[in-house]
Image (cartoon, rainbow over all chains, first blue to last red; front, top):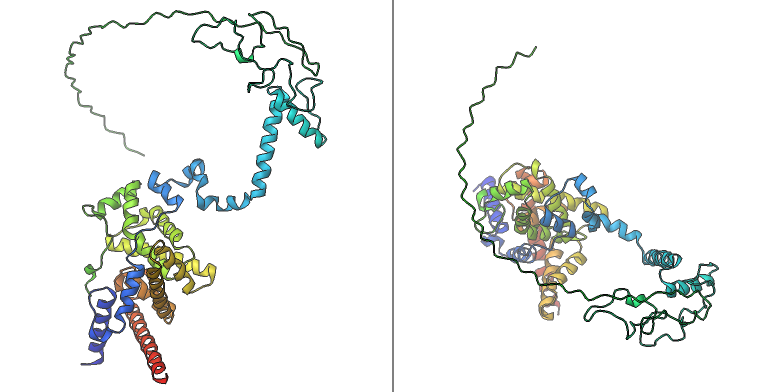
Length: 247
Length: 202
């Protein structure tokens, strides 16, 4: 056997070993290693795809323009890894605090939430900001009662349940009753102004009349739809005149 | 060598590669998933055995590139397999350049630990030792020999397919695998010799 034939035989044996088709006697010593390489690294299941590939599996591929426009893909890890590095915990907390301050401060300025407004005003005062209070002379403590007769049943100060004499319809809650000042038998509220001296608001009791809604019955309508016979449509062939030669 | 013995893309039974490829070119997400499931395991294995920093994430990157470049691909099943491994090989080289690293046992360790996570402690230890044994043996080969041997065994590619992946003639691939196997045999014989000598001296 010459050298060329010998080399070819060796190549065939190596090829059989590496492709898992059998082991020649000459390569028995290295066969366990090749088998172990195959068992450890070739016969493994497909790994879980990353988020970007998951998007492809869910929606297909998008062009670069679509990707730029699509807000969902902004959150892909590949693209957001650098953004995530920018959002350190400290920055997150700072942004959250700023957003909360702006939101609640805005509400307070609008006078929408007197209790919160007073609380924020107290906090702001510590850092030297003078925000308006719910009333010009509101106490510094946000938990101070606004009316002497304010109930202590869990309702917020200044808010009382509907009076027993209210004329709300049975089974129907009076809309706006929670914002109505308590009254006895629907009379004008006579509670004194808040302890801070704020202006009292007279809100007349709201009465909701009983509404009788008759049951709605839908009669059975016998509807007969006759079959529609359409005549066959014949389209005449269109013949186009020959185009003039292009000069 | 009989090239047809090397598989192309192992799709689920009943699926035709050409139809799946056409669907993938149309952008069908299910077709992408089929191609991924058929090849991702071996691609990830190839990247792992070479100590890629994050083999699973890199595998996803390989397939993202492949799917985005599908319109440029022309060929059959086996050529698709070679093409995917070519992308994987290039990404691996980029990854190596970034890290300036070659095969390391630590990469194998973490990978083996992940693979057997949740299993028996004894099994884990045996698995760990086996992986270490394989990687230690491969570390004695040159980078080109490592690439050829792993592409052939883990990637299940033929000599011709490996030649396409690494951009060398088939004859050069044969020479590399011949020398690689010889180096592995020498190393194993040396290891056995060392053990034998140790036994004698004791």
